[in-house]
Length: 225
Image (cartoon, rainbow, N blue to C red; front, side):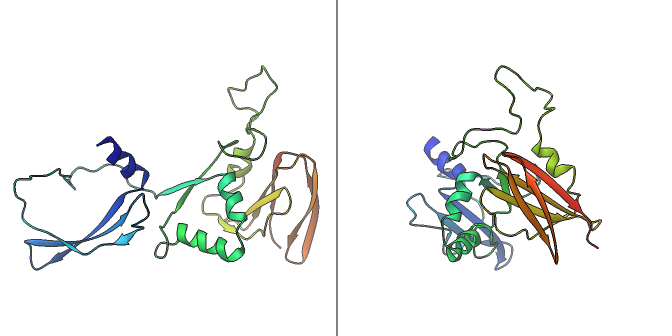
């Protein structure tokens, strides 16, 4: 039983049901999709089944009780960490599109709609270990007074902001941009390199030159004219 639950929880052996009424109240039809550890089944649709009036069970059962409710689901997703991003970036553009489509498309993929972003170094990385609150050896920062990256996002990105295109990362630089409901643009740029980096911010016909220290994050905010 422990083996079965391990694979059910990890999503390696799963079934999905959709219910619909058929032939009056006595029967309900269900559809199902199955995935298995050996990849014989990969969200494979099965033949429809039928619910019939219950009898004394002679096998293990799962009892559904719609009257007992728990939390509302915001969505389902997975971890998006440097090793994942690095592997996706190694693919050509066509394969990248295919992989992302199979991950997030609600019909042609598995419909992931949430991503967990690592705060600090994940378990798998090709970079030196780091956090967003590094202090000298022997020191601590329990109040998180030197914790920087969280504020780089939350202080400047408003509720209802829309992410906008910020191009492809270049060298050690990576950026993400949003347009806030008040019209202002917020651009967050990270320099993962070991040296300071000078770069351009291009916006329409305008350009601005700025620089970013090594291993740092900056937020740039402006209101389009």
